[in-house]
Length: 232
Length: 359
Image (cartoon, rainbow over all chains, first blue to last red; front, side, top):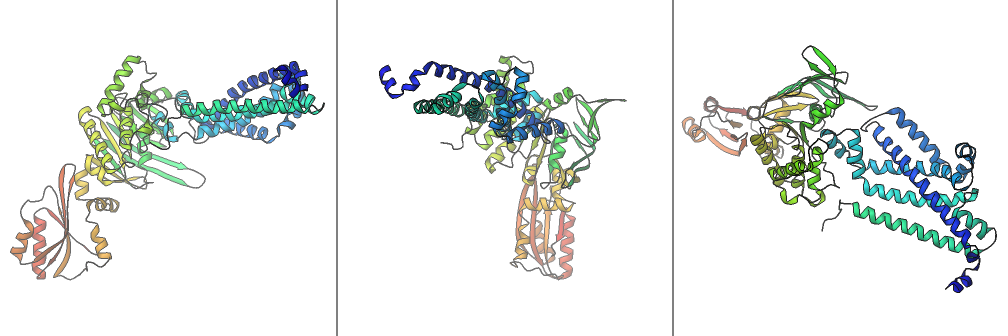
């Protein structure tokens, strides 16, 4: 088996410990940036929905600030954002390279995207349900957790899946500016040293990671959906 | 039970300034089924949403039995306690809302919760134990006759069943008042019938005061005790349902009453010239309205005999309004002009309203 692998992907096997380091770096970036994105994006998405003029707690100021920030960071291409944020990242975490240095731009890249996704998922909750909850005496936290988040759960799982996949993409792009991970592994060894088998393996691996996330997301979304469009 | 006085509500937007509720004052009695009817945009929905303050009125006051009086000034709510006036706290407002049930046209159930959990929604976080909640929900489901659907999801229910769940949910906190916002408008006739029957039962059994908004006169006719007719934010007519039906005053009320009586077909017949309107004294098209106060003798044949006039009935209809009969006849009467006039006078003297149908 080992011999066969050495024959098929010789360069990859020679650098396999480097590869494992990169894979672990990718996962670290993914999980840390992902967790922060989930919290911040979720929070901002909820705030956007409840503070809009017809929301349950209208607040023009918070709403416009969030709108503007989200729009600005959404419109900057990630690769430019990476470079643009270097000074800020350095002051915040002390370095602009490695896993630590990559988390900051990843969060800036993913949070606005996720915020919008959460906003649209929550907006799809029928306003009638919110009104019914108000009529039953629910307060703002009750409406957020018991109506918005609960009713939108299948949609939220879908947008979390999409965002997770997009964060995987962003981590590899961050590799271009020294973040480590699969992206830099593919660039440094595959591209710069012309070891095409390394690039191929990276592509296949990313394909597998993305597919696994997608399958998990789809399954959970389906399991949590109780609203059937067609009755048997 | 509910005392609304001088209520005002505007909606201001870039496009328009809508005066949704314009100086409305009504009294809704304890244990009464009170109907509010109007076309869409008449302000009835806004008015009913002011009762549980889903909308804050601009001004005016609302008194609710066992809760007290709340006045609004420039959209700020105050609780009035004798001479004292204090800002209404969010907590009190939520307490008030919990003591008033509400049901909606599109049910507004939570799709991801079972029937049981939907009904349990208002009971959770109120200090009741799990066992108490279970017992209460099961009782409520039995009350609306849906015990076997306890673990189903709303998507597995018919419209009528969904509205039953919504009613059980609205009754969870033992409210004395139920607000119904077009609750039967999305239902088929059978389901409408059964929901109205259920509401009437609940009204009798629990002494529940019910405020019903609708655009269908049939709903009012079937279950309301009193009715307010709304147009452009104003209550244009109010009274006992039977009185309003048998003797509508405002034009819009007449339209509503006609739309539900079946006698409005005469207008179509006249329009299509199936029936010729003859405007001479010896032949007239008349409308007779028989109320519960009308004398119950064989009026038509008696008049025809005694006054030597011919009466041919074009349309006739008997309605049951608030459990009393309300009859209408459209007839063509012809004969000697003096006799026709005398005949009509005689009919009118028997408590039957006589109207000439004109173009």
